[in-house]
Image (tube, rainbow, N blue to C red; front, side, top):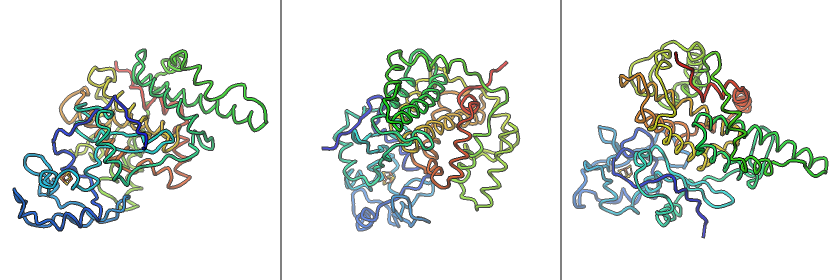
Length: 431
Ligand code: SF4
């Protein structure tokens, strides 16, 4: 029987909010489910569903091979979603009759040498609100969903630690444990923990290079990656935390890493032409670099806003309604393995830091729209939902690294800049 890796610090039980069924994202339906459900006479069931088409073709084939999606009601909800926010297929024919994508949400699966890592999507309202049962408590349901899944991702072997430095799964395991321990550490703030993770990964790169060189020269290494990590663990990672705690926000604001993320968001919302995309990237790059200038609002859908107004909104990572939630989320992103190590350890982790910066920024814009000068937990939850949908779990954002070696080199250059890490994680001091 497949071994499952089930985290017990995230929870989920469907609260029937209907939010995932009225979302603007494209929900692909597999061919077998479409054929089966199209054969049902919905007007003869009790209670009947209104007549009319239940499916429509997608403008393009999705990554999972689906060519069809649900028809939508005028308010954007799936045609099967009922006024009581329940799924009409589930109510009339049972959970097993639903298309696989609906049965699978909000679970995610990544196959590792230790077993299948089961994750949850923070695009789900119940997961973000921490409502429901832990994953070990729902193992039987998880197994059933996994058995029908065609979306199980597989880690590359070997894993990429950094550029041309590869490591084995056995070497990666303690890196992940260390990052998770830092993100839960009770002796440092979340920003310090994120910075310490970056310091730790740089150390791992150095250790693995020393180890590889010794092995190439056919001598026993004086230090190893696993040995170095064991020493850090014995001291509860206090050495890397001490280094991280000294970091200060750069003298000049560092907003340029937000430009490609904002352009991706624009791209995912309106699919511009290639020329339109390049122009949007230039516009966003120069405005974010200057820290001012008006931009169309692809986050809340409001009127254009000025970057400087958003920057003026206060974000307190230590606020009681923000710190535990963001720790839970970023720990789960690491556990799920969908950024690191799937897209490389160093690159995946630095991408996570860039997305942390974007989360703060999206939350600030949301607070501004809601007439506040300080970000609240609700703003952050909404921002995390956007991040999950458009960048981390339900989007192919991290795959841009595989499109062209030029993009990869550019991203790595940005990620190596120490000011990038400090600018992404820390907030400027306010008078
Ligand atoms: S089929 Fe059911 S579960 Fe799937 S999107 Fe429609 S209402 Fe939601």
